[in-house]
Image (cartoon, rainbow, N blue to C red):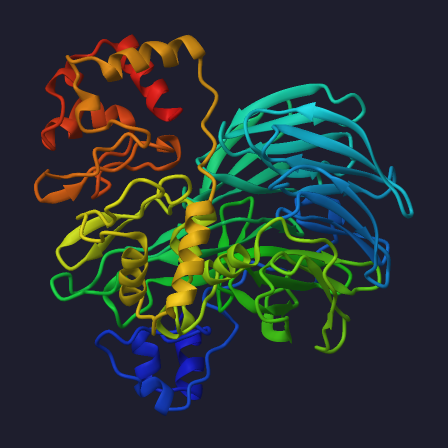
Length: 600
């Protein structure tokens, strides 16, 4: 760290160091100065902030199919899973669409076996993995395998004999035999699991998580062992937003961000994080199997995809809210060095990366449903054309782009987007300090229509008013009336998180308890959205939230003071003046009531 500070002092002002203005992060304007800008400091796309754990020479390569991806290389062509249209798309080396196949709306990630010419695609909505035969200009379904609720990430073992699948709603990792589709085993995962990768020797499976602040590592062998490996964080900071993971040699590499939800000056803070310093910064972590780690800071907002060119030891990172590619040379060695090497089309919505045998970088632009191609040398980008039509209207497409836009309009200097806190349309599991109140990030998907008023204090009568207030707190310059309309339309269209699988009889018994006069839950939580749309005095005046998507919205209450629903019912509910009878529930009744609530 001493060497790092010395290096920075030589290149920039002490003001920049003191305020933490490094690695391309845009600082807030809610109370600080812009001295660092006047002193000529230029934000960087990549800066290693700890000692590297890389080796003296480049690491050995791993087959590209070991990590889940939105796009994979098929020779110099590509195979892409488009969540928008729900199609699997095959292109040739020129980028032309030569075949497409319906998987299902919100199709998730895929893995590809180049030897067998088989693709495995997660059908997120229909709880299956689709096995696809990939011809030169033809795609055909071979089989489909049933999975637990909401499959997302898929990855192959090095011998291609096992397919690993992450499921979001049921928080499960499933191992399938690729020869038969037979399920071998399951393992529990942290909340909101997403991408997955397998180590080159096949001994470790690592799963990224949006809200746990860690990755799940499953060590294989005669006895499987699971553990959580924390993402590197610092004082008062929380690791969030880990959508993807890849292996660089034996090190798992994870792009993510750090959130600082508690302001330094609580009583005067009217911006998220306190105003001057950005409450969210973007990072990349190298995680060794021996417990060592290294961290770099980057300027990729909403990092979504990472890929490693093992032949050249070059790593690439892209983000949903950034229209550029960050390239890191010597990625597996002691002295990685990064830069921005390519500018993508505005509003690309990058969430997939692949490397072709010739070293061309393929970027999946999810908002344009196109592939950008970048040669291994140089920064010239071949911007592909639209490969498949969007399933969204033009207005919803515009709203989605605004939701994922890291621009001056939405936040101070574009440091954040709506998706930075509302991960995948959900929440980050944090409570943010706004003036004197700690206010939890709410889930958006499926919880906005028919639930006015908005904000925890119920002071936003409608959704446009709430959106404008949020942008002010993010330090944004504001959106036009038309853009607010587009953004609101998209927010209202975000689907509700899938409910986990629970026993039907337990759900029915829990519903009876919920509606009973003894517990009185339905007194406030009534109607289609399970809210009376009123405010109540709970150590302050707070709006009654709807109870949809509770399984995906922990912790609970406006201040996040209840980590689980059991805590809500047995402890914190009593503190906040809710049903005293709930604290006397028998264990079975409590489990039944929780099952009901989790499946709303």
